[in-house]
Amino acid sequence: MDLKQLASGVDTIWVVLTAAMILLMEGGFALLEAGFVRQKNAVSIIMKVFVDIAFGALVFYIFGFAIMYGTDAGGFIGTSGFMLGGDLSHIDLSINHETYWLFQCAFVIAVISIVSGAVAERVNFRAYILYTIVMTGLIYPIAGHWVWSVNGWLLQLGMIDFAGSAVIHGLGGFSALAAAMIIGPRIGKFAADGSANIVPPSNLPLASVGAFILWFGWFGFNSGSTLSATNTSIGHIAVTTMLSAAAGSATCILFTMIRYKKSDPPMVINGALAGLVGITAGCAFVSDAAAILIGILSGIAMVLATELLEKRGIDDPVGAFAVHGVSGSIGTLAVGLFAIPELTGGTTAGLFYGGGWRLLGVQALGLVVVCVWGFLLTWAALKLIGTVVKLRVSRDEELIGLDVGIHGVPAYSQEKDFIDLNALKKDH
Image (tube, rainbow, N blue to C red):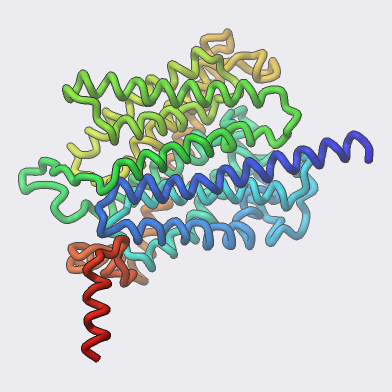
């Protein structure tokens, strides 16, 4: 075995392992969202996560990957690579196409999971399945093609989004906003005068464990995007990821203490995630100090965005837009400010490092295009899906809870349920 084959084998192991770390984040999403929603809707959260993984993987294999990474003429959409067949020779990596697909598949599953939380507790399960197919097969792959495919028009302009602050989180966050607006708030979330009522989370310890799993998986998310185990930037990426997450959470601890006179646990949990989202675009290209600043800004912006949505009468049970849409926007723009030429290969630099306004302008353009694309296509897709199936469950199903109303089983059985069942058996 020569050195090239050895390097390819090591890189393959690295990418498969980091892909598995990213897939484990679905467990984090499941626990986080189940903890944030009411007990009567926990099973529905788990079922949507399984839809994300099962349908997302199949759709992305059949045609999503081809649209995202296939050959094209104008930089807008791929046309080869369906079911990993056809011409994919332009994907020049040390790993094979199947390994690359696996890593990217973990990403596409994460995108749809962002939207899941924003429509929790009232979305029709059938409608969610149809939307998952559209998101993983069309909306995300096209946006991803623009930024990450070798001929993508935004990439050709010079846009930098290392692991997806815009392509994954900005797109997912603004898609979540559109979905939440179309489906409407949960029953009882807002009073007649428009003021927001507090809907207490069912299990904050569960939500915090979900956040810790997401935090762990993010090291695969960001460091794995090197696609090479021998890339010397892996350590730096991991450090900036850690610092930004810590800064986001620490900021929310202090900021909510000042703003609410008490440290708000859901905000602190989401603060860590906001820092992770914010650093995703520039984790390989900014300094440690910039990573901390990005985390601070992302944490504060997340809190303010959460408050703004409630004032606007928009119900987002897990803060999907505030965490992903807002923090993803901050992280994307931050690259245009803080990118260091030594870390970008000397080809480009942020405004504060002598690069001028060009990179910031390209980042802003790419951000707007990707987020508007996600918002409008989600809006259109849900409107179209709504002509086929109902987007929202019935009032009775929502009041009784989606677990029993839609899936026919509660998340937590009580001891008396078993006692009654045994008594029933004796009677017969």
